[in-house]
Image (cartoon, rainbow, N blue to C red; front, side, top):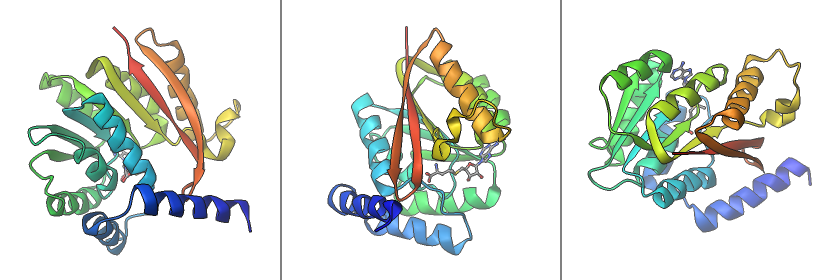
Length: 223
Ligand SMILES: C[S@@+](CC[C@H](N)C(=O)[O-])C[C@H]1O[C@@H](n2cnc3c(N)ncnc32)[C@H](O)[C@@H]1O
């Protein structure tokens, strides 16, 4: 058995046991696939991790950068109370339309708002609204802009908030200081910012599984 087959088998076991699909999650992935969206959503057990992190945070307000078809948004939105709020940014209008349908089916359309456009344009507009601070920010969009997203996440949160940055390992390419891959460079710059930022305490974790060899960084916003 290949190593990646073993990773898949373990993910299947964990997911069936701890993060089983329901009709809403299954339909979200089905409709995303039918609309031609790429299968780059988080894995089910990763979605459950996001949900648990939001619940541990006691999150009432969540910001997501990178919606795709709203699969991770559903996991996160389910962690919120009925009067909670989730804003998710998506560049692609077709992805946003699919996500809105999936969120409506999940009964989260009153809580979760999909905003279309480049996140670096949407973020300052959001800041202009003087929103209450977000308790959790999930960053999962164009990796080249990761350092900007981390900076914005710090601005839009409060001491004690959690920032989750996805896909920080990139099959190990993250260690290549000379990489010309914009996603690797953006991820390294974001990690270096997390390491040096006076308002952040961070770590990063490698993962293997149905999404290959990757990982995520967590940062807590300090006082
Ligand atoms: C990895 S997918 C998000 C997956 C989603 N979080 C999930 O797990 O279900 C990244 C998404 O970010 C979007 N994106 C790319 N560049 C963006 C940008 N500049 N602003 C906002 N969204 C962007 C892509 O269109 C894509 O839908």
